[in-house]
Length: 535
Image: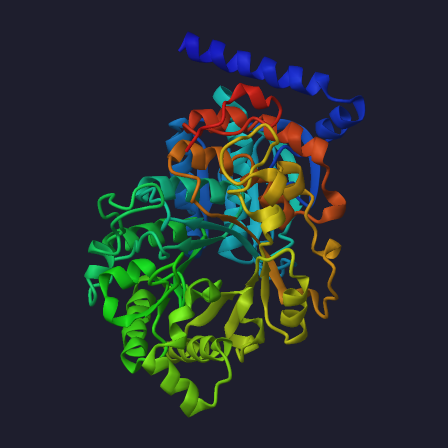
């Protein structure tokens, strides 16, 4: 125990030294700012602290608060070995979860009042109560062995409702425990949408009972080794992960990529292949075969059963990489002639709109990348992800058509891109750009070269982690942290209230938490401190 305390004091000294070396203005701002990430909208520092002890209780007068209270119980025990019981009535040294239907603000808004004798978290919905609990948990964890939370009064609400992260597990598979760890940190930073890229060229990672070869054959290989043993999530795994995410108020959105990026699926069931190109063989599904649509419809129905989000992302991107053989396929040519289609883009449009109809019939929203901007998709049942930062005209089309959008431009939200000029592995930053923590943090919708008709049309922002160059959990951590914290603040806190120097100071207190959780992170305060993993 003495060794643990000594290590903790050394860490505290290191954080103090970092603060001291900052400019006086930044240091003063940091001292006055609430240490929670993302930065709360309103925060007033009080005196004293709430100390957890054997008599601390979580008060739940309303049964609806029980799931949130149970999460708080679990986190206090998991992180601090604190056992805090629940009770229905107010008591000394209690943490009260309070519903208030009059509480103003969007979904997820909350109030947190920490005093020496009690803690009160107020919201009009469970998501708000959960966000208040997360802020409390952050304050407790940063105090280390003292088991207390400093006195703060917070009134807080999110800037965006969609605060997301996409993980590509087709190119490299990381497994259930790693995904759960990522979900834990998403919750810690109040991120609430997990976009799960489960199918692509290298591998199919989702068990489909009606088509078992998709996982057993399509799951073979990855971007590093095309002969790697099949890796995929069973349906039982999926149910477990979805439930785990739901406890943290995170919605999981699966992506079944089509009509391109279908190589892994076509290895398993080549009868539905639409061919490809020399560089991208067997890249597409066949849009000229009626059986293809029945096949995809069955896959989507089974996917719908597994994911209660009622949303499926169908990709729709980069089809031109491998649709050459559509020109010679007799079924595709017959379709083009019958429907009077002039080019392959029209075929692509037909495919996407027909698959969209299949999703609508099972009450699912259609999600897709920005290539679908010219297609006939309904605003009330579609969400489009703008990823091509060099094509703002695509975003303008989406806006003009009143389609809801999630902003995830490659610059700065592709987390496979390098974050520092000292990095040497992965996409060359001189060619592709540098997505530093500062660039992620400073992103604003207002800086985009488009004209928004309605601010509500932008649902939020999302970081995307493609894994061609990320093969190990260590490199995944290195590319995620601390940029995950930066995107959380960009999605939560209004731009006028953000301060990057202050953010770095608050973030320094999280580095010991990363180490305690076994994360191999990028130390932006001292890049040489953590070497870059090669893969």
